[in-house]
Image (cartoon, rainbow, N blue to C red; front, side, top):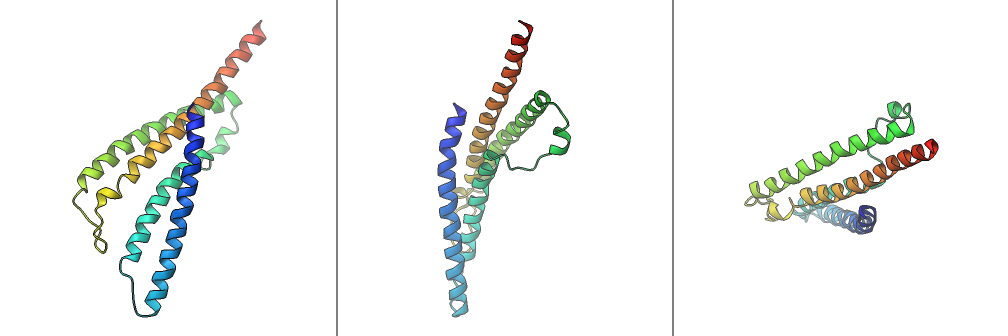
Length: 166
C-alpha cells in the first residue's frame, strides 16, 4: 500500500522540483542581467534562496526513494542477505524516528518564526517553514514503504525455511 502511495508522490515531487529549479535558473538569470544594467532586483536572491530550500527538502525524499543516500555498504556486503535486510530494517526504524522528531521540531519552528519575515520580500517565515515537516512526512511515507518491502523479504526467508523443513 505504502509503495503505491510513495510512487504516486514521486511523480509529483519530480515535476515540482523541475519547475522550481527552472524558476531558480530564470530568476537568477534575470537578476544577473538586471544587475549588469545597473538595475538590481533586490528580492531575487531571497526568492532564489527560498526556492532552493524548498527544492532541497523535496529532493531529500526523491533521493531516499532511489536509495541513493550515503550508506555503509562495505560492511553490509559482508553479511548474508537475511542479515542485510535485518540491518536495513533497523536503519529504517532509526530514520523513521528521526523524521518523526523532525516533523515535531519543524512544527515548533513554524510557531517560533510565525512573526519573523524575510527582509527584502516581507514574506513571513510561517509560509516557508512548513516545507520542513512536509518533506519529513513525505520521507516517512517512503521509509514505511521501504520497511514494508524489507518485512516482506524477511517473511519470504521464513516461508522458504518452513518449506525446506517440510
